[in-house]
Length: 145
Length: 145
Length: 121
Length: 121
Ligand SMILES: Nc1ncnc2c1ncn2[C@@H]1O[C@H](COP(=O)(O)OP(=O)(O)O)[C@@H](O)[C@H]1O
Ligand SMILES: Nc1ncnc2c1ncn2[C@@H]1O[C@H](COP(=O)(O)OP(=O)(O)O)[C@@H](O)[C@H]1O
Image 1 (cartoon, each protein chain N blue to C red):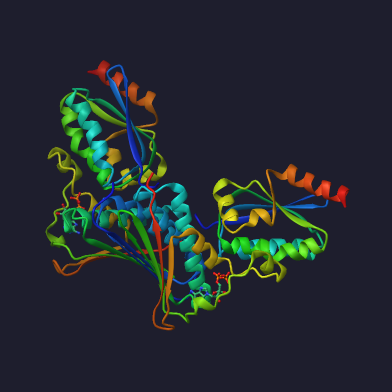
Image 2: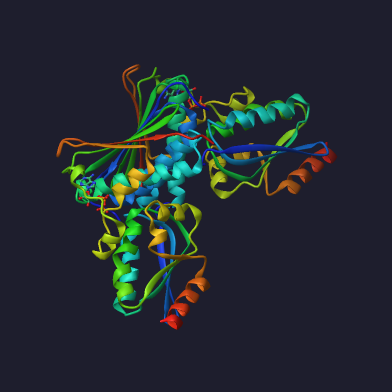
């Protein structure tokens, strides 16, 4: 099942949370086809969901006329996911990673998404050009079933 | 659920029959999200499967390094599907639509795919530039559940 | 996952029952083709294709039935199709397969059809 | 379809049981938030969230638990989480929710926890 060449998949879709299910399915099918462990596929799905939810809500402020792009590159040893937007961008370095107990005390629901991506993927890297092209690249080293 | 603007979805993926399941899922999720009847979604899935199987097998001769592109545009009243390849192309006008009994007598398994698309979709239209860009556009008028 | 497909084989007297499970498309049709080819090669031409668990079929799957039906009928056998769910039946009907193939409810009915045929002939 | 989600409500004495079903993500989290908000507004702060049928959760879903837990505990109540399937439990654990929330096996166990709390206090 493992091929020697890189397999590339791209998905473009309207920036709406109703499309998160489609995005998870896209990732799940690619993962299953690559023969990845179901548990690992679930975790990659989760990271991509978080990344896209952030683009939809923060980069585009829920403007459904905007477009989210999800790229997946499948290699022998890694899956690389890239999420792209042309929205407002942000400086990831300034996002404080507060303790969960602090967030609870402040009754804040946010601040979990980026943490989740970091916990789940092996590499998470932003490249931000506000209004032009913001990219989030995530890499996971593969375990095959 | 029906929005006033057009919703565009694009899927790029390697030309391999193992990706047909992913393609059907892509169509199925878009259809379900648009609130189409399940029966109608199944038929559109089938037409897109046939179109992509033809590209993978005929346009690209099963060369998995090539790319298939599937576009879906969802409007109030129609879903428009476009399947694109840069493969060898063909002249759809020259494809004879033989009687099923004749095909059986000749022990041929082929020749059913284009017929299926025509039966299932409201419009089916090819635009062929061999090696450059071959497009198959199909339109279905929607029934919502 | 959604492109999984399996075909399994059971022998009931001189009737071969092929059970299809899952999605039959251009990716999985070769597995089905191989399974029928095996029956034909072994001279077993009374074939029942049980579609109870078949959830999807495209023209690539229909093509497999078409490739073999003539040869099998000439050899005095037939392909009886049974257990087809409505969604799959619709695909058979779009191309007019219901008038070219013997499609019945379940395996016993398919077997009965073969028995009738044997008596009649 | 894969982004369907439903939350239903049952009252057992002073305990409110919210049953989650399906996929809890940024799209569906507002429905869950609304359901908890209703309980809080009505002064019902002994809440059991039954996750037996919850097949997926993202941080947007976890965020709903976080928003309310402090307010509910200050009012003398709690959110007990039960019936979590392994795949969902893994997500709770990634962010350390298992040490901040009372996660138990099933609804009776969750109810027992509330009873204990009432006796103890
Ligand atoms: N793609 C993005 N574009 C713009 N801002 C973002 C993006 N992703 C995250 N952010 C900012 O970082 C913050 C933290 O994000 P995150 O940890 O995912 O939590 P949440 O989304 O729940 O607030 C967000 O509130 C937002 O201000
Ligand atoms: N996208 C395509 N590119 C090149 N040739 C095609 C394409 N689609 C169809 N054809 C040609 O038309 C013929 C009929 O196609 P079809 O009706 O789908 O049946 P089948 O694919 O089973 O042969 C094919 O055998 C092929 O020669």
